[in-house]
Length: 298
Image (cartoon, rainbow, N blue to C red; front, side):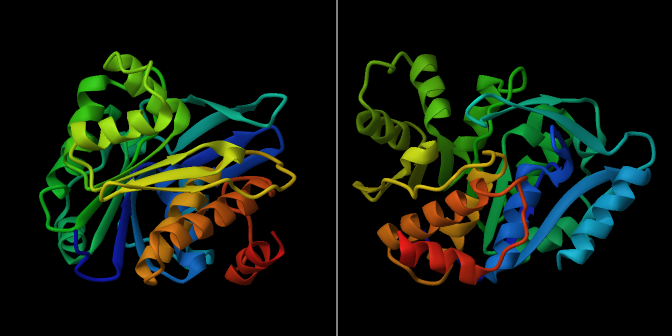
């Protein structure tokens, strides 16, 4: 698996997370792109918003954050996406996602296809494929020669097994959390397997070059080339878990692009995810120095 260049394309939902503390920009692909940008990577985001005030605010947010809006399409009939976020007593998030929304209607434009062909890494999630229109666009882009990384985000009732499996089979790298790994164990009647056996089975079943499993405050597990790498995570005072997995993914990708070993990439990813979990919202303001300090002090 060789990445041809350092250009990254993230595609999928951008939205407003309506948290108990107020509305924050969100959506896994946008979160990943923002974190990659803050860590110093060359990244673009493709999505769709409505022709409304909430969409205009997202455009302003992206520009203020240093991301290009060239691949943000505008839908004249569907609204900008909003999500209700509920936090439990442990600050773990569940999501109530409205539909249909603008990112359900993402179109394969010439500029989007060109950007995908130019990119070395293509990051996408499963949620954006809930609608056939956006799913067709994503599947078309999967035919390019970029390395494909799928961020599994199972959100009922949108986690259709057939669609999720199809997307994973077209991917090189898979990132999912331990609960989502358990769902696959149930789907395939492998739930009695221990964690590592289940991850190894998953990689073989879907022909994945890398499988990365996040485990909340318990760290993460990586399986690649027949070898396991583990990190116990970093202890922080968590504010909420929103966006922590997206920050983890950005940290992991950035570290790999910088030539770090797989175990060091996992460590940097865990530090990035933990730092974001210690702040409110999915995309808090920070810089790379703060992540490095967490690595030093833990």
